[in-house]
Image: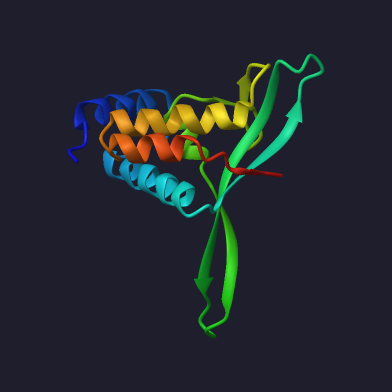
Length: 143
């Protein structure tokens, strides 16, 4: 598949305009591929920080569980955050936090968030239509 570099460049340009420390298109592409791989492999976790009293919004963060070997050849598990990726996609960050606020009720907002991101990545050319439809249905585990 061919990536829609114009759309990626526009997203990166918008992010860089509002942030002191910018990113490159390559960083965005790597974050997108990492997100897709974590969803494919079932390693994505969503942490819900809080739900508003009205139930109309919640704070969330998406993390991936990764595995790595140490220098002494021990296997360790780590959680890696998708903060910059969500910020680049224009989600609303919670001040002094690594969470994002999403609004909405009456549906599974974690499902909706992943569904929206996967479809956006599909339109950008990261994944084909069949894979987009499959991954969009994979709601991350919620903690």
